[in-house]
Amino acid sequence: MSARRVLRWSAALAAAVLLPTVGAAYLGYTQLSGNITHEKVTDRLGTVRPPKYTKALNILLIGSDTRAGENAQFGHTAGARSDTIILLHISPLRDGATAISFPRDLMVDAPACTTATGAAVPPALEMINATFSAGGAACTWKTIESVTGIHVDHFMQIDFTGFKRMVDALGGVEVCLPEAVNDPKSHLELAAGRHTVTGNTALAYVRTRYALGDGSDLGRIRRQQLFMAAMVRKATSTGLITSPVRLYKFLNAATKSLTTDDDLDLGTLRTIADSVRGMSTGQVRFLTVPNHYWEVDPNRVALTQPQAAQLFTAVSKDTHAPAADPSTSASPGHRSTAPTRATVSVRVVNGSGRAGLARRVTARLRHLGFTRAVAATAPTSASRTAIRTTMAGQSATRVLAGALTRSPALTREVGTGRTLTLVLGDDWAAAPGRQGIRLRDAASGGIIRASTLSSGVTARTGACHA
Image 1 (cartoon, rainbow, N blue to C red):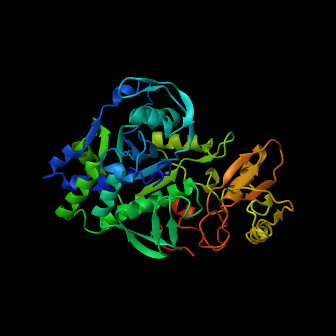
Image 2 (cartoon, rainbow, N blue to C red; image 1 turned 30 degrees about the horizontal axis):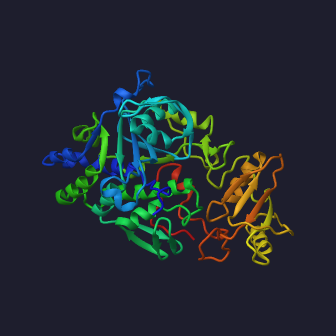
Image 3 (cartoon, rainbow, N blue to C red; image 1 turned 60 degrees about the horizontal axis):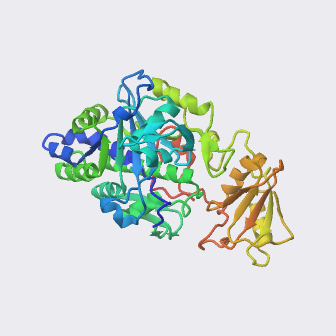
């Protein structure tokens, strides 16, 4: 299991499923509080913090990839990273909730903070997940407040083992694959069709990136959001709440791998749960912060303004939050004024050494709507498939990358031209079912549809898409 391709399944599973049920199980289960690990963080947040305008609850959810303790089975890597960061906003009347995902590659101006040992961490322009590595949950908490202007009340952190325990305690979660998957990175190996996934398979499903959907990290976030919604639905529709034995098993699994701030104990969780127990899954929205590919490095993303600021203000003051809009996301399918497949110019170069490959790929690109694709006559040599682009071609790059099953290497060249060069490397596999980068099938929409995220997760997670 690759140490860098770590889980983004999210601590939101702990909150989204745990909060509506813990109140019902509180009596007789107070011993569960001993399972929770507490961390003192509030004294490291500083004195200048965003104001709290309403009685809403804002909980920072962090997924940790630590390999300490039982997590050593997932391989060895030093330290811990936060490859999942979600801000869960529970409305003042407890009649709705919004879970906002922050991509791990989001570039932010992180403020100065301190570690648990008191060491100073200087301010920096860096990826948001680096704040956890540098200063732990307190540094990520302070960064979220600084970037969004939203007052955060508590944090919850969960690890690999905790996720597996919760899925198993629910009896697994059903997923449906439109095609067979064999991903050596996440170790996900499933045939096409419906599956009830548990244990390591569930972990691999939410963790895999390149083998499902469009191959983007943002696509993986959307898939995980639907998986979380499926967990909430199963927890609230299968008698879990009314079965003391099953409920205790689930809560025991969740709390054993849970780390929170000092003020978020089981009693506080009960108070929250009593308020939101009646909330239906249709009242829980999953959003991703509006973002676009960062101009300096297309492998990173940045906040799209003013949409991000509008969202943060709406959450902070609990006004009507804007619906998720695919046009404000760096994920493939970007619309508004972005170029389309028909307007993107692509020059295809054969770097694989396989005769006629550039011509065949060009023909398939044209079939997929890239009518300006042309095959280069002069071949080259390349081990990796790559897209060569200029600063002016970043929007077009998103369109082309969205047509590939896996993210290629990106090379930025000097100039102002907008024509992209797709270099087909040794890792190109044009035939369906083979490993490597290839063009997505024209009829396949992947597992996730962006429309399911605009007004709450209402689509069936187990639905196969043609």
